[in-house]
Image 1 (cartoon, one colour):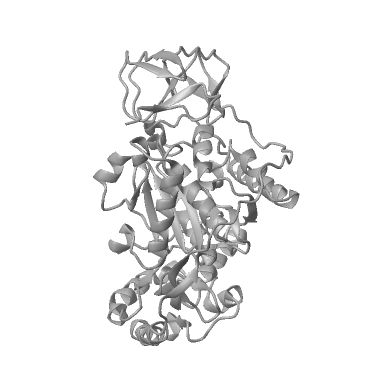
Image 2 (cartoon, helix red, strand yellow):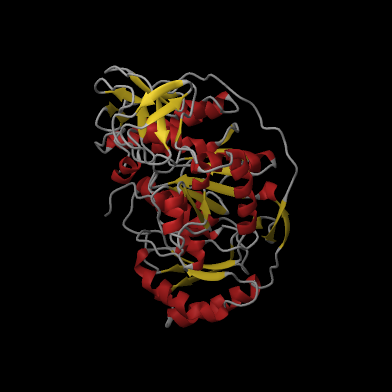
Length: 493
């Protein structure tokens, strides 16, 4: 059993992997450290005296500044550390690293759509254009379960409160995300359910959808129907007949797109779960696959690590715009940029946004950044992509699905039951959470505290993801959970 970890040789703090008692005498890199206080699991203690005003080093980088003198063996947390970050910054491109070495191709058992795209689920989705028909969509979902037969994995409605009384970019984002979901390959059939008088009505939405297969996508305007539920059921029966013709077949994992997100992080997230996802990402990319990293506010403080991995200067410029654009979004609403860690984050051992971000970006592994996506933009480039979306768990996970992720990997130190439009794998950073919430957690990275390496666990996670892509249901799917949330950015009329 490992009791603590010094992550980087230059670190001035170590992290408790198990609760450590005051007075404990530890040997760290040949020096003796006596703990002056109890150190909870996931929290930090000083490996040397840290004078007030000096940087606190973790992950080999500054996670903040000491607010007071911190003695060797002292507890290092919010009471004596503050953020050292500023506002909108200027950046210089300093390219580092290079492409990953290719590894042997693998396959999963997926669905091949008529347009050639790959899918990991064969579901029928009911997409409302406006919140006014949410309850109708739910009623249709309940009645439509009779058509879940053969290879159809499920029939689900995705209610949301938008689609009308919106303006400008806010309305555009809603239309783009709805169109993205309508076009998502995991949906073998889609019923687009409109009211008729909304701003984002079906006729307005169709240009955003682009070309569609009339066998796969059906439309219904409720105001034009005498009985919208019965008419919808007739359309879903047609969709079920079409979607039921798809069968799983071997598909190269180079066609797999996986989103990466964390939430309810703790002090172990950046040590166990996030690095494991990073190892998975590198492995998938080495086989020609694609991953998407999002939650831009949780890149603040670690953004230069991503910028310097951009394949070219244009991508670097796009990443700078991604970061500074989100900072301007905060300041335009008179909000502080760097007060991100939540009460749960702090309880778990995260002290500052730099601390959170340096742990969060571990999910990106070491691959070069090959694409930068705006909110609602579909992924087009294989490899590691960065996506503009907020840190909110459900909004960001929906954004990953909208950009084309077949599956979302969600790391957590606190636990959450939510789902997204695609299979959402919950990955625990600690074994206590995995043991307590077995109905939520799909994969436990807390075992790294006991034994094994990140690379070994990354390979196990890769095998698990291939199982999910081949039809293994995750806990949220088994519970019947399917959620979505659109990023609200403007006024409501």
